[in-house]
Length: 351
Image 1 (tube, rainbow, N blue to C red):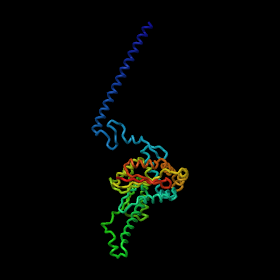
Image 2: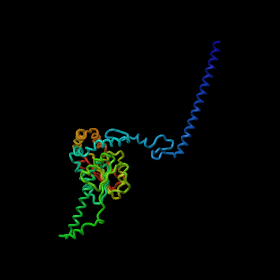
Image 3: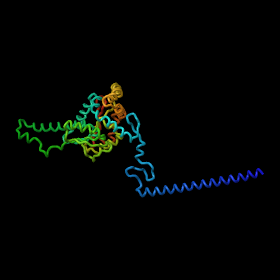
């Protein structure tokens, strides 16, 4: 009697399990059908919309990630800190926004005024002639451009004096004849200061007004990795103490090559690797123990100058950077060490 009841209970349980499994399979089949319909509808919608993203750069119509998302996943350095590439540009912008008003004062304090000699040597090696067009990228407060305009003005005056004094005891008519006619004079030299940071440009404009520089100079907000200029526009491209702050240095170099005229010259003044071991140890101690303190005392900003010190150590050394410039397409690349390699001047030409 008991065994019959058990058999009936077992059969009832088996039937219930079978019904449950059938129901589950039915539900799964329904879900699969809905999913297939949804994917088909999405494909049709994507095709009607044109397939792929144009500016967002989607890899495929059905892809759920775009190139911009992949860029956010890539990392780079911000000083000694590792950050997403998309974040570095924002943080660098904030650094220079914070220090803009005290930037030139801090340059004098940090380098004990030697930065002025480094920039003068840049112009001496450049030796620009009247009529040259300069693009000064990351030019900020205008130091290089001011020197450039003064240098070409001096060269032009010198050439004019030589032309006028080439005749012994000249008459007034001789002097007048030696001066070039208006149409024969070289095109006016121009300098364009291009910087991504509006605060730095603002300080540069204030300095230009104070110095009475009213012609031959313009100010442009622009990114070194995507310059807002046409191809083959400039005779000289300079970047002084700015390229190490760029996220993609190789891209900035390619942009420099693009905007230079054939025969144009690329010149980069940047902190580099000290070649003397004793000087290197002293330089490291000064950089990490003194410069951030100066930043706090003078500019009220320790962190920004801590970053600047760290960014120097993350930048390629002289030979590695020379190779990067050559890889970008420049020829006759060479470099000069200043102050034992504290700073290096790299130069290359576009053929």
